[in-house]
Image (tube, rainbow over all chains, first blue to last red; front, side, top):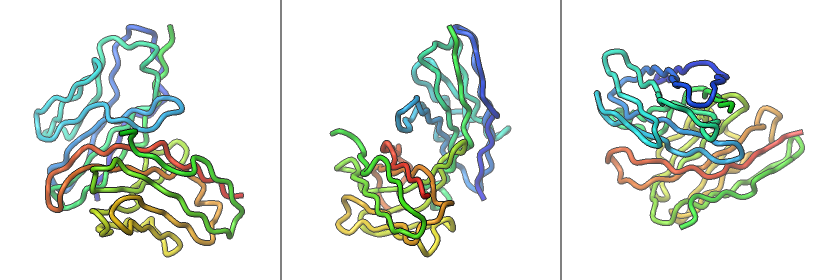
Length: 114
Length: 117
């Protein structure tokens, strides 16, 4: 079945550091890929998405590129801020296989220190 | 619109009791999803409705779990004879979309945290 593997956390960075959170996936079809973020005490929010190979999703300075050849969707940000401290989840939806459920990774907790 | 709402936000119950959670989706959304999230894990899919029809159910949804969406608007998730292993955050999400159509963004509610003692 479908699965998502993402980088183990927690990750601690200093403000303005470069961030990469790795995500790889296994899917039977051609999935759409997502990054969701969960800020402390809040619900899951969509951060960015990409629906086909080589698409780049971007939002709030975060970027991720859908790489079909490496089955990856790594999240990057050039300069993190304290306000980026949150848990980040990589997810896929394999609607081409007839399913609209999201399959999530385990999450990566990011802490950014001043 | 205020987004997806869930009620209650917290529920503490004793093992063996029944509990029911409610989800109100974004008003124009016809798809509604339930997920379960345990500590340190990502959300796991439970079930999905297109309007009032329950179209997908996970193997995680044992016979003790039942979900309904009687008029295609709000949904309820009931757990009968709760067990300590049911302790988790229960998340509801909604999206627009038609049967057989492409994927649409899922908007999540704040969740209901269930503790079974």
